[in-house]
Length: 280
Image 1 (cartoon, rainbow, N blue to C red):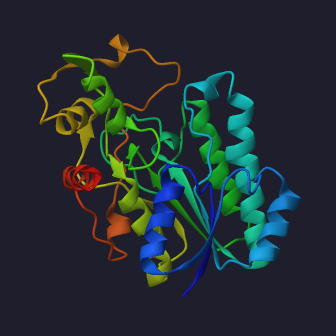
Image 2: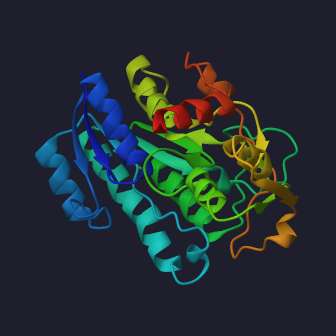
């Protein structure tokens, strides 16, 4: 059995990882930002020497995509690049494996097909640029690593699109949702299971992409979330719903490499149904 160190343990994914590892009876230490400042290289080194994990599960990130364009730009870089670099280099020194979570935002969204792991990155917003730079620090660190790119994350813990839609439905008879951005929703449970699966099967180190199977627009996703309500949902274009940060229009990432590890990927529809059932 491996011992894990979860970084960013109180976030949406970090909390899901804690829940899943308890089910597996894994040993783990769950560290919040208060427990460990990943932007402090010495603090990271001291903590890893103290806890001696076999793997660092890096669920720590600055994820305020629109704020990263201006007021949060510096913090976005410090956390997502400098913090990641510290974790990766310390992992290399300690001969500890690292699992780093990245994003579909490393791509520009102009590919009409599916993005492969080795397709050229071309991030168009500050968050995507920082996460791509974070990936590069991991690749150049000398650590044994898994980079897992994901997209459209939802889950039981924290803020996400599912809860936003449910809350809006309580006070609105009609909602407008963007229908020209296409991607793959991802349940945190599926993502957590895949991260641990890579370790359990000893998959080759490198970059993977993991979301739930099948594709959707945000409008499709909203309709599925609210299908048992009377709320009317109208599709709109991205131009009708302007946001500060650029969003990729077509960010479908290939799941072929993930599937080749033997991992069974549920569709986003099945994942959403399971998630909503679990909430009850």
